[in-house]
Length: 269
Image (cartoon, rainbow, N blue to C red; front, side, top):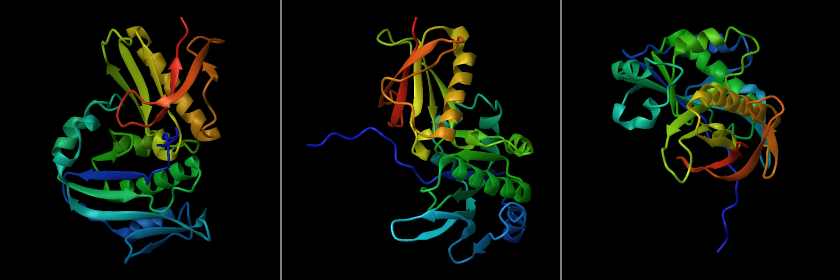
């Protein structure tokens, strides 16, 4: 019987836009917004998809355009949103309260785009979601693989920076108080990099005063990996919290759910 090989396969990136009232989705207005960035974008009514000829994907026997599928005007089923999505929104204190008010949703996914480089995928979804935010004014964005909610107002403001690449649409940094004598008091990890085919990161530690610094460092690792690929491997070292410090890396399966390949970071004492 074979042993499962470490590594994450890219997944279809999925998001929900949540609304208090049923949105009036004018697709033509969304396309008009997108054509400022992707002049050749078209909407296929039959497939309910946006087609991006400027972004080609290489398949086994042919090349084809990137696509995003839109499912609009659905009644929002709050029970379908797991509790985990409401527990790790350190960036938005009002997330759970806003989610409770929402009754409708619109789903967006990057259908047939898993072959793109992570940065290209993120920028594509970033522009699609930004167009929908501008046109339909949602109350919240749900990142399915990042297991979190995002404030659309903050997201739109962040997009004003021309250098902003919205990895935080896809990924999140989480904190768990595990209080298990076999481990340490805290576990912090990234989630969502796995959906891009990259390794997530995890770190066990005891010092509460390090939480913010560890979170910042995990985001540094996440952005680095997005830019250069899944290059951190078994036996490598990466920079710790102190300048010049080195932490050991082990590639293994995650201690947290969902089970995925991660880089476990061992902070040297």
